[in-house]
Image 1 (cartoon, one colour):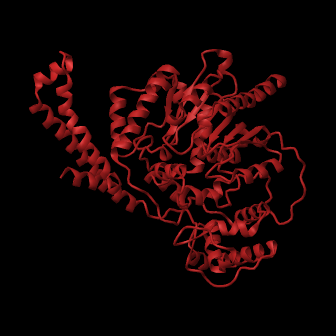
Image 2 (cartoon, helix red, strand yellow):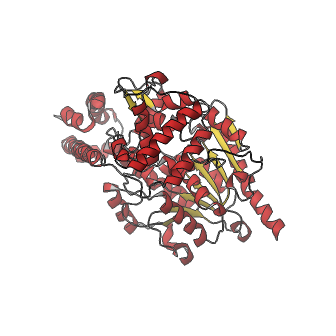
Image 3 (cartoon, rainbow, N blue to C red):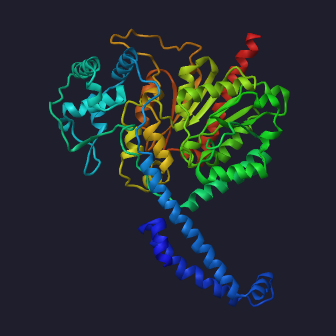
Length: 534
């Protein structure tokens, strides 16, 4: 019965765990009682309570937890089915915006055949096809999704949109001097993130419980007590934690309020609806007036994964904001603000604390948020440090295919596959809320057919004029050599971290130190400019 319950809760892959539990753990309850020869508090307790009481208690706890796991498995199946519903951008591209995006993409594609085949894979083994296998209707499917965010049939219902789509495909063929064969190859699948199914694999409730407990301890012991940070922003239910853990978080806040309650009134002046962030204000009045740093984490378990990095970041003695993205932190959160809402609240966050602009530091998906801010309100960005960025050359397939559709073959790929890309709410965000056309960051605006040669220098107000990009050489998500070449050709400071995988800088002291040093230099450049201007 115990094995069957565990099977329902976890699936076949965890049946071995159940066997080990029965064979190894339960007998040790008895052996523990036998091996304790001397008088100890444990023996006194066991002798006082007696095995007749302990064994039933342990059994009830185990069966009770497994019952919760079964219910959570059913909950997962219901949620996965419900989250399959399609979602469309709140604001779609206009014709002029589509045309500009098209030309920006065209001007940054070096090898059209390699670029094209990346967006397609064979149904039976997820491998990329040869260019000659792709037919015109397959190509049209991708264009309909990429520029209209919809199915091909719906795009062709509008005669103007249908004509524009044909113009794009004809122009691409003419520009790149290639010819796509007519017809449709039904053995190929096109990557269309917002239209493809939400792919997710069940995770046991105990994993989410461990993340919740670990996050609560990290926030309390380190962020609040050790580093004296304040949790500010939205207090709405379902923003920071979702599901049952949202209820637990509300109860915890009632019993043990976080440091935000003791924050000055100015810190709570703006009523945030979507944003949760942590704020560190240096005790020195001089340091408190320096250019602040805004850190935005990537996909994973939130700020919990960046503890040591944050420790060194706070060691710079500058004001620091750490923005939470709970919808990609395994917090079971469905509440996802739009890009515009996120930018609006980050701007409000800075203005609330009296800072006209800040240095943005983003890792992985955090660079997408940095890209939104830099493109929407460049005057608020004093500079940027981007680590393993996903926002450059996003019209290439690498991010979409490697994170969502690639069949894992190596250990790190399996870890990313199970711990990140197939987690229900992370997959839901990527497949239903992440919009590539909002996130892609073109170094030069080449949104027209004929492009004049521009100078090497950036506009001083351009955030990229004070930006450094760090790329992991063996990144399994981003094509780092391609991105580095693109950035360096456009005179952006791009640095390759040899031998590192995606996010490996977190365990590599040499590069972590260089990144922290570069963040300080970037912020100090702005401080020095302010001193000279006065």
